[in-house]
Amino acid sequence: FFFKQKTASEIRNCDWSSDVCSSDLFALAANPVQAQTGFTGPYAPTNWTQSVQGDGSINTSGAPNSITLYGSDDGSGPANVDFTVPASGAGTVKFDWAYTSYDLAAAESDSFGYLLHGNFTKLSNDSGASSQSGSTSFSVLAGDVFGFRQSSQDSILGRAFTTISNFNAPSPSASVPGPLPLLGASAALGWSRRLRHRRRPPGYRPRPGPRR
Image 1 (cartoon, one colour):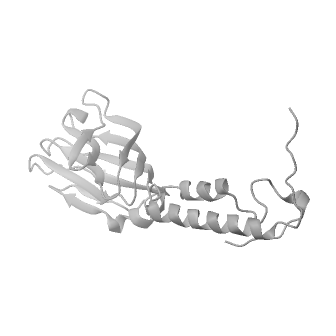
Image 2 (cartoon, rainbow, N blue to C red; image 1 turned 180 degrees about the horizontal axis):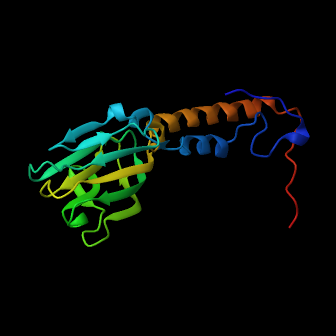
Image 3 (cartoon, rainbow, N blue to C red; image 1 turned 180 degrees about the vertical axis):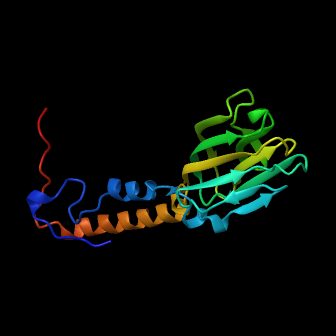
């Protein structure tokens, strides 16, 4: 922190020594950096784990804007294509998805959804059209493993695939501030108060507020 000398007419009642007052300090501690947008940083494709069964695949060439999961279609039976990563901070995961199936049974045989703690939440509609889309969000804590799954019940009669875009997830600095940042803000506040008393000119009296 640095302090700037002011004239008496410029000084707010909250602070007679600097541009820093308690509301400024605690707002700084309580308003973290925005979440990570796109498949970059801690969510770059190289940081994700790929688990591919059958002849499925994951195309990350569209990153950081998008990634695409392709389901299996080699006749090998039930198969999953998973793309997972640990959450770098606590917050909300958001993304758009666009699903297409060339299976004769469409989404009834090939489904798409997201994973959290290994639990699968289906987003595609079994009775829906062969092309579907939507926007989804869910909450995570730092370290929670989440991701996406393209699933096939039988790996025959056509492949399904899903593109994930507009991905947004919490970054490390987006977590709720712990005791150390707040302790630092409190220490700076105490220093500001000490300087306030030392810098008041002789005979200073705070100006009264406006009459109501």
